[in-house]
Picture: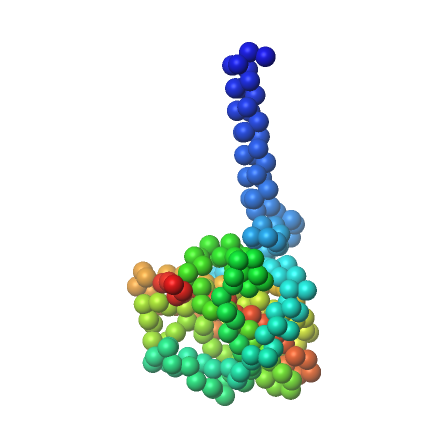
Length: 239
Ligand SMILES: O=C(O)CCC(=O)C(=O)O
């Protein structure tokens, strides 16, 4: 084959490969307004639950086995949950509005479960890993543990605001939804699903955070609920 033809064939093969990779990586519609999304090492399905403000739910963000592993592994490190002080968000105290248990997970290390989950959250939100807070495991025990209506953003409006929330449900329950109090929207816990929203879409442009995103972890009545908080700041949080 003449060298010119070989070059042409090689270029065509490279082009085909690029199209194939782009096709595999691009979000694909999977029906009912859902999009298949490659998030790091998992193929997840993402749906918009609420348009304005945007709240998305992501199925298969974690596998059931991963959810169980995380809960088992860190159960021994749970402490009474705390809430950031209204005037100084670096101070956290126990608060009767939040009666659950929680544990901070050490940052992920190459290939471990926490690192894989962190990478998925980065792929989902488009936010840099260094803006991610330390992951927080939460456990609500029946009867009655809950988190009363609150905002995830800080009231003292610091430069490094808590902008994006990704809350992953580690258990399936037919009670104790996340309730968006201003939107009339309840999201029931489904194991491995994530609920994602931007608390302060216009942060840095002189606008306040979105008070329509007030939400609550409704009380558990009969079952134990586990979740995982993945929050992103507007400025780097990790070194
Ligand atoms: O438990 C839930 O459904 C929501 C949890 C939550 O809002 C939080 O931990 O900030």
